[in-house]
Length: 127
Image 1 (cartoon, rainbow, N blue to C red):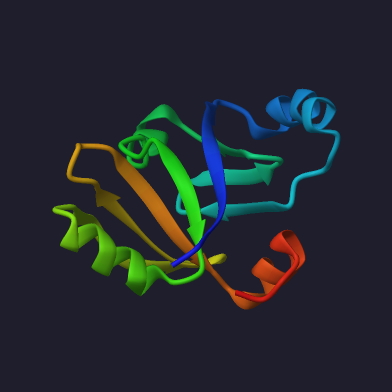
Image 2 (cartoon, rainbow, N blue to C red; image 1 turned 45 degrees about the vertical axis):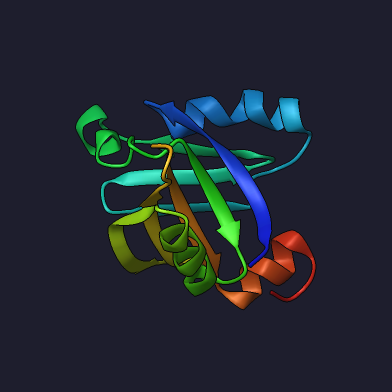
């Protein structure tokens, strides 16, 4: 299993109001922007900006980061072998397969295995 990218999560009320300063900070446009359930997300630089009503954002607030990996099954095998556990079962989103897992030390992380097209476009090589 290889970590392809790690995003720091930024929780905001308004995605459009938040993006201009981030564009300036990272010197780039968002790589991704999409809606999921009642929230909006944008990936820009090493930030995953999550916007929406506070109650909806809270549904995803238990994870400290979003980690993009090349093999979600290998993540589960490695984490469970080391005493971790899957806390939200695997599901799909517009970007690929994902799940939430708690490490043995208590950290909870969202792990995502992107669809090959995103890996190629954002990372620059097939996963």
